[in-house]
Length: 391
Image 1 (cartoon, helix red, strand yellow):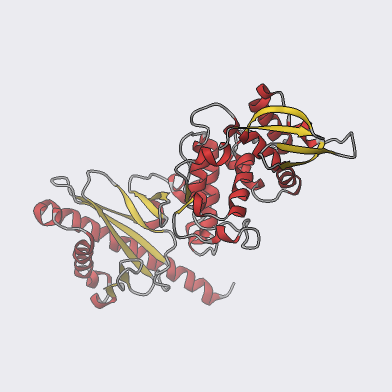
Image 2 (cartoon, helix red, strand yellow; image 1 turned 90 degrees about the vertical axis):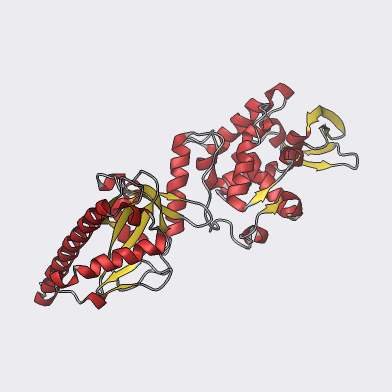
């Protein structure tokens, strides 16, 4: 072993132990001071509390052989708030509530001071008369992520062990996570799995960022993330693409439940920032249609949503056969997903269940060659040359 590396490692541990003791002394002093100055501390918040903490830290600097000037504010909006020498930092948070829970900083840490290797979180509970302070290593206080317009950590100073932190739940080390170039994808994967396991209805996680599986070559307009858009301003090819996704991911839209479009609406909004004031009409407007085979009426008075799906049946089948987008979404969105099963077969069985009252099965239509609109919005098909085909 290289002796210089060994000494550096020991020195680093000693420095961190000294920093931990320093923060313990500072926290105890703040706690004691707050009991004697309740009004003063209850009026602190944000940047004001940062200044109070900074002054308190400097007051103990000489006891730890630290130059007070080496304890300083970081640049505005940088992370963490206070720098301690060249390797350590303190992030200051507070709440006026009688709890140890609050919203923290961005998970991205794009303005992190690069030289800082270890951060402690000093948390002030400024609810009079029970004002108190706690301080822990930063990663030991973060229990979840609030995924809004900008993903931010959620703080809970009552966490007892690392398994309760967001990093324990995601099974990733904090430093590994913060240094990853793929943070957003890691978070997306975690929340998708969590959503899938919960089985909750009427809610869906916010899908942060774009998806690498939907390339600009496949559907350019879906890359235009940033603004919420109405369905009606989306171009026709994109609408048809999203309809095909809907048939694959949310076959419940063929059912009779009044809430059958709910999950689809959530998915469009959270995934692509698309909303519609009349989503049902986009799939079933026009009411009914007739389907002919070689000019002979085969299925009469069919719901338009079934007719529209049948038009895209070849596209849908290709998605399953080639595992193309949105195949990977099925596990997160669809009730018919089961591990290690034929998802195409499960999808057909699920759709058949919903449309069985209309005396039509997906397999019946797959034996035909094409479906097309006529001028009066009826549907025609041409028989396949191969009379017997298995799908």
